[in-house]
Amino acid sequence: MSQCFCPVKGVRDLVGKKWVLLIINTLGNFGVQRFKDLQTRLKGISPKSLSDTLSRLLEFGLIHRES
Image (cartoon, rainbow, N blue to C red; front, side, top):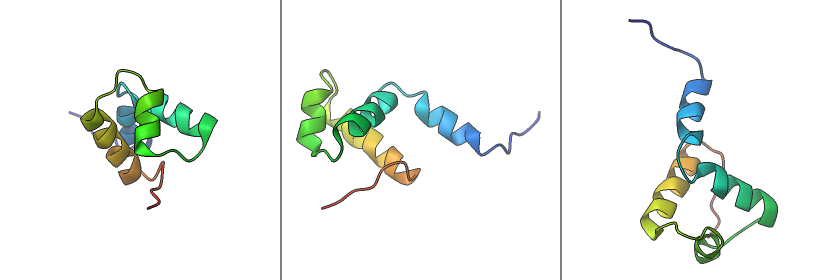
């Protein structure tokens, strides 16, 4: 069994998730967004899915959080 040490593998796995590209697209188009604003713009996403996906994007350094 071969192992992949490619740094793109983790990003590929992340981007393949259902809401990731839609969240990134929304942030790219509308800039800084509050959680509730994202939830409104992304019709159909549950608060848990949004929270989990944002956490993963934070882990990968693709977004940052301001409070």
